[in-house]
Length: 96
Image 1 (cartoon, rainbow, N blue to C red):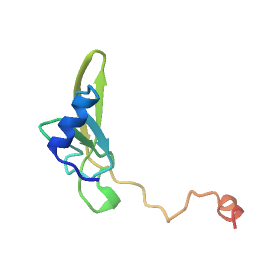
Image 2 (tube, rainbow, N blue to C red; image 1 turned 180 degrees about the horizontal axis):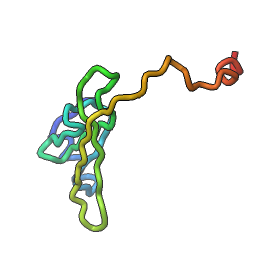
Image 3 (tube, one colour; image 1 turned 120 degrees about the vertical axis):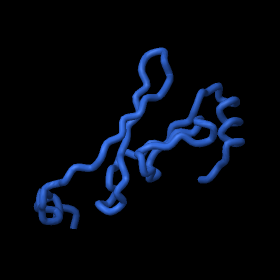
Image 4 (cartoon, rainbow, N blue to C red; image 1 turned 45 degrees about the horizontal axis):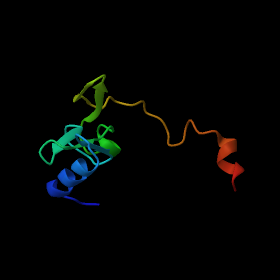
């Protein structure tokens, strides 16, 4: 769903909130602060689908300080493995 800063501001006032945190939209730095820093997007999958070159990130909010802190990270090489190499073969055919 798409919405602009006016909808964000109205939603925050109506619900007595400081900001919205949402996820699963690719952001090159792993996170994005939109709508006057009131709509935060966090994307945790670095180098999405092994093709996008993006960073992943997570957000930390602690105690009474609701200021979000972001940690970004890059992908690391994963081991070469055949597709489904670690799948339990008996469970693959159990539902057939």
